[in-house]
Length: 280
Image 1 (cartoon, rainbow, N blue to C red):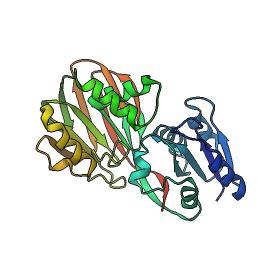
Image 2: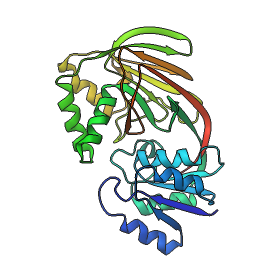
Image 3: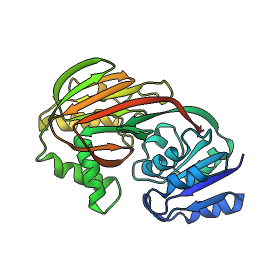
Image 4: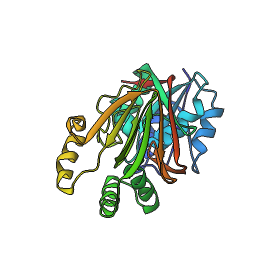
């Protein structure tokens, strides 16, 4: 199958020279993006059967959006700050091994979500994590350390919001720190916010974090990083296909590591088997 690699040169840290040398050796076609959003345009115009996103979750989102509905297969070479979907799919972070997945892997169906019309493939949500995504984007520095620094800075003055949550017609109102809707199991860096997620089951996993005291934070963090956050009595997990979240004021939301400003009402739905994706 003909394959095109779309490379985001500024994703994550480090040079892409090793990868480009490998692609040259193997005779693969590739293009390097020069601006935000270009990955979607290039993917949409691609004539190849397989289109590979080289970058983080944001790059993957652009490329995935570009090939939705085209029948093309998505490949992933993870080079981002969090790489949530790639980690969930067990795609190697070594670029040479990741390219080997493109040549020798298998395809599985990949669901997609929509949040207020924006496609996502890993996670989306509102609340504290959306505010951290905004702060991270505005920090001007990448990497997990910057993300942690921004999260700790915001937490000192953060107040939980009141949300009305409707999951497939079951509706209630509560105060929460965050509401995450997931197709994969994590935000990135193995922070498993939705430990039971399955990206091919036609369902979205919803994780709601209640208000909690500061002394509970270390235990919650440990459970998050060990895939056991659902064992906390502060965490509530659900599954559904159509989710509506209403809050008192407009504000940020996020999807696949990128934030955007949106209104009081957030509508989230699932597109089953939206893409084919190459995995080990």
